[in-house]
Length: 140
Image (tube, rainbow, N blue to C red):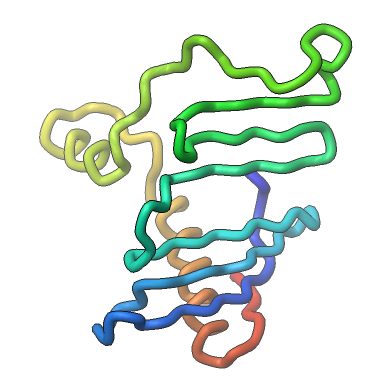
């Protein structure tokens, strides 16, 4: 969505004492100067899944406590001023693991492949390197 990631700075912790991070945040800078903040936690309570996208032309908020989608765009201010909540949305896709398993078992299309897996692996490798070194890691 934002293009090619360039570098990442991550902090992970192990709140429950297990050998897997259970509370993590990464700041990712992309080649086009966009910045993403990615956070996940298996120890927080009452935290609804939320996607927030802020840009120069508008904002998209999805999920949250009300599980709604809200959009506001400068490009629509003349026609539809203020926040817009769509009345209908497309049906949600299955989780990626389910798409992959269905593709293997049933021959249904898999919209991602080796290249996307390689890109995600490079990003995660850089995130772990950043955490271990306490600095920023270049991607790719």
